[in-house]
Length: 79
Image (cartoon, rainbow, N blue to C red):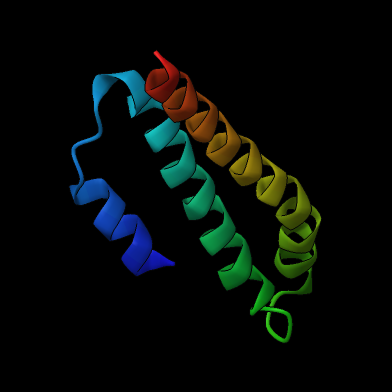
């Protein structure tokens, strides 16, 4: 995931989808943090459980960001 984030940060997104591009990067970053925190289960149960609670919402945020980008690209292609 971190390689994907790093690669996406290096891309210059067109202005028309720059916000969606950033939303995807931010959502991936949140999910990466959730996974890292979940792995702390043996050391810090509270942090781990909190991350588990946030994970599902953050997957929905990522899905929404991707769908928003797809919709914008489809709109652009249909014009």
